[in-house]
Length: 199
Image (tube, rainbow, N blue to C red):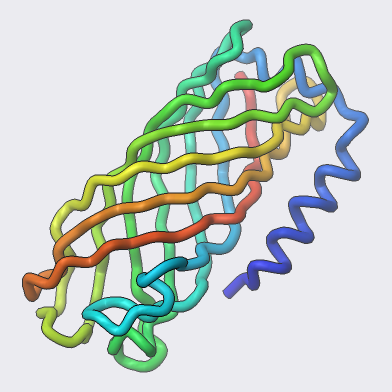
């Protein structure tokens, strides 16, 4: 399970090493595909609460995104992600992950154009289902489909005409209902880095 400090160090290292690369050619591509890996860090009651499904710990974050860009400032994106939170404090069987799987979509806005490293901010919506085996007051299985929102910020760091690194930080909130009827409010931060191939 990646530690948050490792993911942050990786993002900073990639930023420093790739700062001289030409990002504009890849960012301006009409289509790019990103494979992402990092850490999912629960916050608020999702991390420290004592309710059903609360009290989780950090875990791995995996995802894939497709981005539709172009010559403008905006890039549309849509993706799929799976987050694995630690679950011992939430009442799951020891060693079992607390898995949130979902899709997201939104828009990124470039803060500068024509620079070698392009910063961006984003906003979007997401849907999530949670697998919660053994959580108190919850039958085995998956939650209802929750709807939420996310805000993000990151860098597009070109490593060639068609390859880029995309370190990012995202804050998400989703409300869902566990199989036993208990409501769960997921609040978490994802720190990750993507490898993007532009077409």
